[in-house]
Length: 390
Figure (spheres, rainbow, N blue to C red):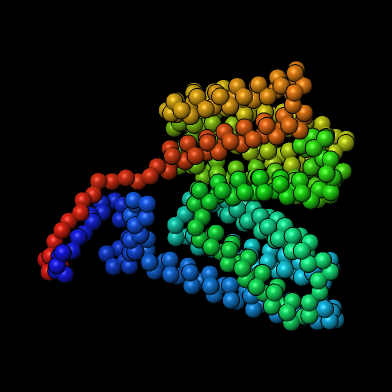
């Protein structure tokens, strides 16, 4: 091909307008896995510059603040664990700067890309991001302190280390907020739910917890029960955010689409009861009664959704419908294995049922995503022309 010959791709005007592309926009085309992705170069560069500046600024500020704290405490050497330690100061400052960075970045994303995000969504996602960051840092320092038992460092080295940890945490949350969309919110739900429960299993201080029941992780009999309860509460809130985000695009109102409206109500009730299970732990007394009733409601909403899925989603694919009924049958089978054949323990039954239900809910969310946010496909053609004629 001569230098004067160029190839051009036609893009429909509707797609250009929907993505706010201008004739003077600096667009980068990325070809990967058989797909061409168009991205605004200036926006990517701006996001990268902002994230790097945030990393440098927060690292510097956190390092200075850490040094001031250690200097006021008159610590010649700083312990890795305990009060006024590397772990404590790093986690506190990371949560402060990281949460601020995530919150500010999501507000920018709402303004430029995701105007449908509401303030309640932003607050919920910010709190969930802070909870995930806390769990990650706590696990990291737990492993680190196990590898370096009794480690103490001087104030200067410690301040630099704290600054780096805070800077990396802030950069990570800022980058996550920049790429926020339905997929990242769903991944946040998955990571928060599974990560939070796993964290509770590891840190509860009772290796024999599984001999009781799953809800035992959130009771007053174990250490760090609040982690398990907070995990359920924020998982419910994130699910509520996803429901609100998706069903708004599906026009799920009583007048426009009653079946979708009923599904929205059921999904919202499911999210609220999931949060309620964590809000009222399985402690002795009245909270035990409330906890059991809420857990039973949780099962009820799931069964209604599975049994009525064909009516609630008449356009659902055959594969999804079959999968839904299969999950329902497996739930009944696991109940028989637990209550009648005594093959499964209570904890085994709860873990199996929760795994099946969560798997089905993720499939349902993805199916609704395809209905509410379908991939934009359009006919295009490649034009070959001399550059002098364009």
